[in-house]
Picture 1 (cartoon, one colour):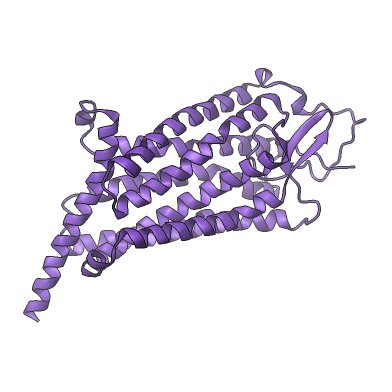
Picture 2 (cartoon, rainbow, N blue to C red):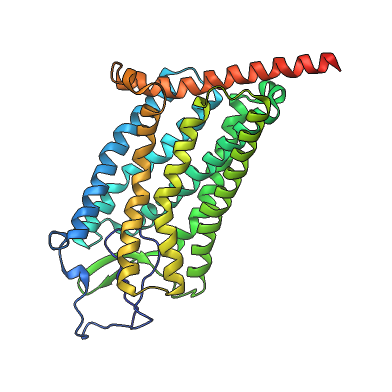
Length: 349
């Protein structure tokens, strides 16, 4: 007899969901939700719409960012960061059609490999995005604290090496999602779900590690970096413009707000502190909200770069290029000015 996973509306949902360890066999008089099509579920239709929109706008928006940052703009440390973020979001958004079909039909028809791969891509996107945001925050902090060193040491080659390392660590942390993801047949339906039956303690260990390394620790590091930046700029009275940090602040806030519901309900599910159906719906909503983060980033590049009115007078490509280029130019001016200040100070000594 096999424990039934009822959280089937979205194939990148991460945890096995059970009813207080009850088991159901095919003779049990229980009507599982996968017998109902999405057309009969209001929540399912809403979440399906959100994921279709995420796919369309995410692929187009991140594709444009990749084109601009990768081929149209002069290569720099900043464009290296944002290009990597856009690539991560693009790959994930491109995998969403598989999840949308599964959500609508509650039947996985794409095989064993794609079942594992779509789950892997989701977590690869989560870890790589937050690690890159941490790297950018540390980069900003170092530039403010040690402007002369940063002026000489911030190179595209070093930034590329850091990006590769961030992706490798992200891939390593995403491997458990492939190991415990499996395709199973039940009640005339094929399901793509997590299976922790062979290692019952893995569920808690994996969920906890995702929260700690993919949310809590990065949040603390970023907050420390931004606190140092604010104190340093205010003490030097050099923070006449906040433009270099507007996009980063928006990206960080968007990431944490989008992923907070998912992590919250995963922890709640582990501790069984809410009714099962509430956890079930919470994880569905949290998963879709987390996915939406991948198409919001290009929007932030557009609307955080220059004055809002001027944006509507230029093309979409110019907006994105201006948003990313402006940050690099402003940071360079800051580094140059800081370098001059430090030079004068050393002369006086």
